Length: 171
Image (cartoon, one colour):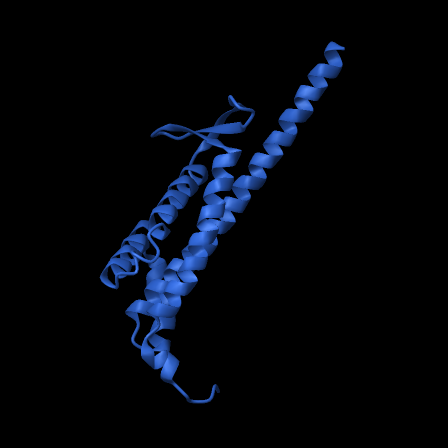
């Protein structure tokens, strides 16, 4: 009986580790899509025409750190009063990228079940130790998904009028 219980515990732990890694991979994928959406919005707002927007989006803005791009996004949204319409976008994205950086630049130091049955990884870097539960990663991923959808609406607002008024046929 002891052996069966121990095997059950090992199987439960393996499933929890797999679920955590899946939640982590999903969050990293969402962070990648958020980075692209942020860059698109900032390029659309700062560019005067389509070729300049593309140049900014593909060459200039990727050279900036994510925090620098988030600062530009916040400035643009505040300047245009879009923060009133989309108040959660920048804070959610800031939290997403803070967690993403911790996960990307740290090592797993322990794994275990928290009170309430949720499993968590404890990540350690040279600076700090932080625990991430599966539910925390899933929650921030879902919130960031909604922020990305909002960024698509913000992108439409960001594009210069010439983009919408250009009636020339595509070549």
